[in-house]
Length: 304
Image (cartoon, rainbow, N blue to C red; front, side):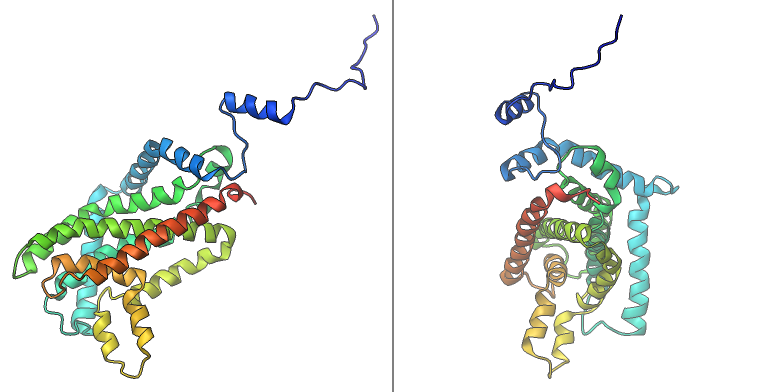
């Protein structure tokens, strides 16, 4: 019996584009490497919310699972760093600048800046560090920078509790109703960090060399944002500087975030509506711009 091969003139039937799209939609299939519609993107993100929270908790556990003290290091590290900063900048260099309660001032600045700096460093690299996951699984990639941001703030919660205890001990006037604004201030800072992570992650994915500059940017922000000194008092000492320089230093996102968290807990920093207005503008402005900017590059993530 002669083996007859396939007819070279035969071609399998091809579905029209409309029928193929309808068939794929009916079975939940979606083309990869293509930016989805914005509303569909939001819907997908909401459907993956449980995964995002689980990944954030996993990040927190993974950071401390190899240590005997575990998550206690999320408290010990900031306290040891705060003592070091107090000895160096508060006593040796003398950056108190007339601040009465320098301990609370420094503690708030340091404990709030740590998660911000971690988000800038690791959030901007969240796409590059998970390339295998991006190329092997289909999910909204915005989960990655959001997960990293939530993980760092979850790990900072014990330190924030210690911060409040330190303020209770060192503030002479004691707690007031304004202290209830502190968790709200932290929420505003979290929203701000989400926007920074979204913008930074897409920029670093597009321009890989920027990843090498993130540590420099973080270090620069530490020294110009008033972590261990008063920005307002420092500006006042430079009479020859243009006024706009002072405004930029005082109202840039990180500096305004630290001031926002100091106002509810420190009597010498009264709560000002201007601070909250600028902080809210930065937070939601960065989040909206960052989310749209990240979404527009959704179809490019994971490509070589």
